[in-house]
Image (cartoon, rainbow, N blue to C red; front, side):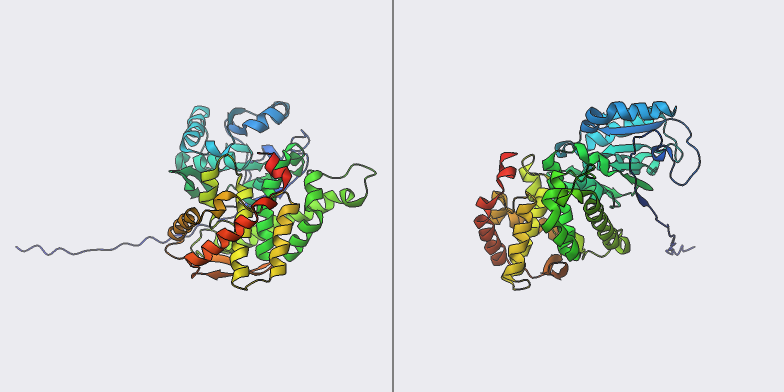
Amino acid sequence: MVYASRSQTWQVRSQQSIAYEIVETRGLLDPRNDSLLAVPGGGSTAGTRLVVLDHSIDALYGTRIRDYFAHHGAAVEYLTIQGAEENKNIEQVMQVADKLNEVGTHRLSSPPLVIGGGVVADVVGLAASLYRRGIPYVRVPTTLLAQVDVSVAAKTGINYGGYRNRLGSYSPPPRTLIDREFLATVPERELRNGMGEIFKMALIKDRRLFELLETYGAALISARFQDPAAGDDGVEGVAGEIADEVIGRAIAGMAEELEPNLWEKNLERSVDYGHSFSPLVEMRAIPELLHGEAVAMDCVFSAVIAAHRELIGAEDLRRIVAAARRLGLAPSHPLFCDTDLVLEALEDTVRHRDGRQNLPMLTGIGEVRFLNDVTHVEIKQACDAMADLLDAAPAAVRGSR
């Protein structure tokens, strides 16, 4: 008997609907506000919930947070982790996973909460995506960068092998809660750091937002994005109203860009502006450069390339550099003058974009197109131009390092 082998093929097709919400609320730690208690999707809490705190948030708000949950008689346990970029690693992910195990976290009905900046949000998000192959969680971003950028993203990520966010997942929390009042205690440099991501959004799609940053950006930082006190007038007197518009436009613009391409099947992404050269520069500069600072420099670097190609005019480039300075963001750094390093950064970006540059480039303030033919010569020219901008770094930024 001759046995004739045959091959068979099975296909499994499925679709999963993804929906998550970003909710702006005020007085999140006021016991009368029950937003922190709600379970996404409805239903009641079963078991103990883990509350993960950024170490700086624990120092500033730890007592109020514990009093809030004690007031409501909620069954919670706490874990405090480091929120610095140097600690965005697999060890902290496993620390969170160990605590989820210890608490006995349920599959759906005891979602952990993470309260802090973007680093802890990414760490907890990745842990939640791995634990029981994925559980829901709730994000409470407390820095400006986390509120306008991390709060919208579906991605989690940790640093690995000397590269930024090299390990990660697509795991959006069902709910993110944003309270601008947290920004009142954010250090000024961290507010400027968040402005780097708002600056990016303004440049790629929102000229009105760019004009708001030109006019009010410095005042918003000075007011820490808080509502004015009674009797205030002038620029500071509209800080609350302008703060809402600036944060709202940044979040709405980011959401609009991400929604049709949430899983990044299309690798031409305008929100990658400011993120083509900066990831490697940022990792090499830790802890000297913060993420938003590096992003702003990348925005300027890319604008220089666009100006050299005459995609934008000299006046647009001047306004872009001037706006960065007004926000207290240095337009350049010695690492952005290092042609070999910037070319290495571009090579890694090309690998990340599956063999293509897909470089978002401005064709005007608020408009982009994509380039795939930027040459080594153009990179060298841009690095030389960045060297000319080094001495223009704002004194406030130089003095904060």
